Length: 431
Image 1 (cartoon, one colour):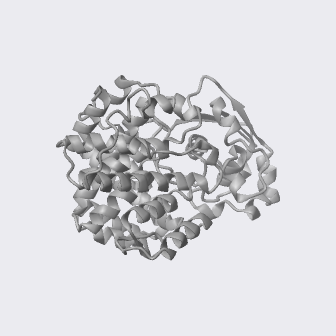
Image 2 (cartoon, helix red, strand yellow):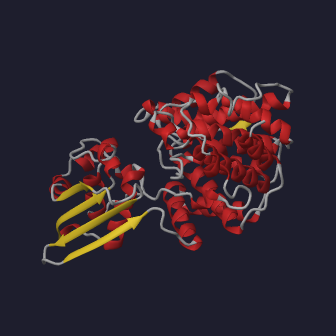
């Protein structure tokens, strides 16, 4: 076996020393994943995928967002898809992927089915999400730019390892698991903007559960499927960056720097929204606003005059105008056709300009506000700027409360922090 497969398998199967911060951030991501999944349970893609699985009348092994039970891998498919339906889940910018929606559906299905404690769920999920980030770094940015969706590709390996850890796989089984997952991991960026994007997350979760079940039953895959000349890296334009993937593995938890979404829109807009939040922009005072952002976002989320709620989620001018007018950008319901048609919002939107600035990173934005009284104020924000654990907890819990209600969010958070059974958490997939 070559270096990457061996190192990842040893990490995945071995004892781990987690930090307090990694454990808390994992619990916050579990709460965040549950909240966005429940909020997205009635989306069209959610109804379609859930109905397909329920119509097959499989073994009732795992709970589904929105109600019903299904076989383990089918539940992972449904819950991964639904929790990404709103595209409101956490993101790791090191490899541009969404770890939680691939890994938590797999880990929860298995730990609940085996009636394991929540601590087993959280540890397996942390290891799986960390490994998905490491795989993403090994593949490199070129893999993403070529059209592969890291949430689906790197995420499948994370889901598989989380499942394998719950099944107590040894190093050889983990090596086999990585090899088998290599022939299943898939997902294209061409699905972005369609139901296919959340489906990619569901595929990752389901592929991970399926591969782990097969390995547990003695399935023997190709030995060089991850790194060989015809392996996943070579055939999926991987950069083969071993240093990026393995540096600090087992000692440093890259997952600690996960970015949680606090606005229900494209992540490319969030730095600007956070800068506007710092400025405390209010519509009656605005003469003009200038936004500077990284050039890559100009073709992603700079729709100038969207007429739909979906379009608003990809429009700097619209979301900043919404925020200035007091709309809560954390609520999916704020992005509506009616709000886009509001003449007052359109008037404010037309006083906002957006410019590309190559000196900014992809996670940065700069705002300049000219007030009607002639005063000018400026603010910048970087999504990678350190956030204290207490601030992160406050904002994730506030977001969850808005999506599923304060009492429910508090009850889930208490369960995650004080322990209990994974099966009890699975019951919270429905209200």
